[in-house]
Image (cartoon, rainbow, N blue to C red; front, side, top):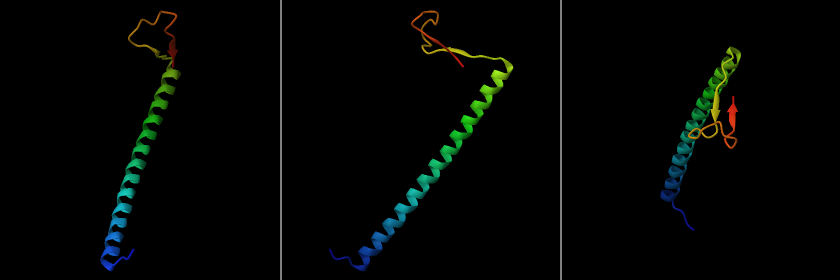
Length: 77
C-alpha cells in the first residue's frame, strides 16, 4: 500500500484528533471519580456523626411492604 504525503498528513491529523478526544474523556472520568470520592466521604462522615449522636436509621429491604413479616428482614445501619 502506497501512501503519499497527503495521506500521511491526513492520518497524522486523525491520530492527533483521536489523542485529544481520549485525553478529554480521561479528564472527564477523572473529574467524575473525584466527585464520587467526595460524595462517599461526606456520606461516611454523616453516618459516623449519626452513630455518635445515637441516631440509627432503620430501613427495610422491601420498602413497599410491611416490615413486620418474617419474610422481610430489617436492615439497621
